[in-house]
Each structure stands twice: as C-alpha cells, then as structure tokens.
Image (cartoon, rainbow, N blue to C red):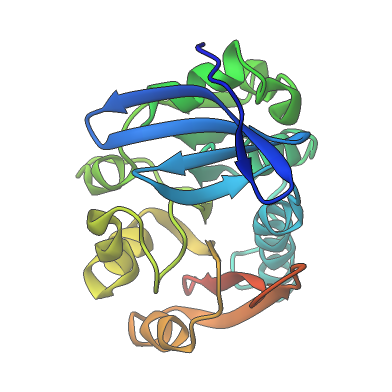
Length: 242
C-alpha cells in the first residue's frame, strides 16, 4: 500500500493508505486518527468509528428468524440458518455473524478486490478478526446484483444487505434497482420460505417500507440506531411469507 502525506480535514489528519481504480471506479482507504474510512468514487461509504448498525443488521435477522420459527411461519426454529451478507465493508457485520455459532453457511459477497485485500493483508483485518478464514464462510468475489440474478442461485434463510448508503441515496447508480420492485422480486426468490431480508440504510425510508409491502413482504419494520450527528442509521427488516 502507498502512504500519502497527511491532509488536514478539520482537526484530524487524514492519511490516504491505498487508492485503486477498478471496473466500478475508484476506491480509497483512508485513516482519520485511529479510524479507517472507505471512499468510493469520491463519496464516503463507511468507517470503523461505530459498528452498531452493521451488527444490528445480523442480529435483527436472526431474531426475526427465531420469531418466525416460534410462530410456525417457517415450520419451527431453524437450528443452523444460512445467511448471505451483501458487502464486506469494514467487516463489522461479517465478524458479528462469525461470532454467533448458530449461523450455518455464511456467504459474503464483495465486488471490490481492494476491500478483500484490506481485510486479508491490510489494517481492516483487525475489524473482521480473521472471519474470512472461518470454515463456515464463503467469500464470493463478484457483484451482488449479478450473483442474485443467477437463475440457479442458492436460497438463504437470511439476506443481510449493506452494499450502498441505502434505498434513497446510492453511490452506484446500478444499485438503485435493488431497492425497487424488480430487485425485491429477485431477493424474494433468493430467500427460503419464511426467510428474512435485512437492509442497512444511512437514513430511514418510509417509501422503501411501502415498496417492501407492495412486493409481498410481511413483518416490515425499521430499527433505528442514533448517531452522533444527523439522522439515525437504520435496518429495514421484512420477511418472505412461508
């Protein structure tokens, strides 16, 4: 990795650790004080300052599976549910999933070679905690939309998606389709009956809640996590009928 001279951003020095051009544009890893940031095409994606909402993405899906099992919606509690995590990011969601022994297969989809490298050999490995080496984990180095669109694709008990800033604010234009009726239809078919969809967002989206209901999902709910400034991060939750 290359190290640039620190730039001043407010009162904290910002150091660019790596900058790469890929098929989807530029991706940058920066360090701000003791935290790390991922920037895509000049737009802030995520940092290591607070992983509560990324962990909630996983926990809320598992809790909802338990509720669905208790109510008989999926024929009993699934002992070893499978989960697909869309987006490796800074690793909080994957590390949290791996720390839960109840999860069975854990598939992580990440399209950016640089981000995978930053976890395997770079500073983000401290946040994923070696989770990429867990025997339950399959790293799928591909674009999430392409993977989901495969006709013979695997079905999961939970889909936990954090690939952009949310339904109302996408960095990559193509990702917007994931949150619309066509994209939700694809997600529906990639879930086991009674399976759970959890979607991270940088802000609440009542319109997305209505789109989920219109697409046939039940149990639509929004969990909010307050942040130090601005609107809360949220996890949108929904379930495919059994």
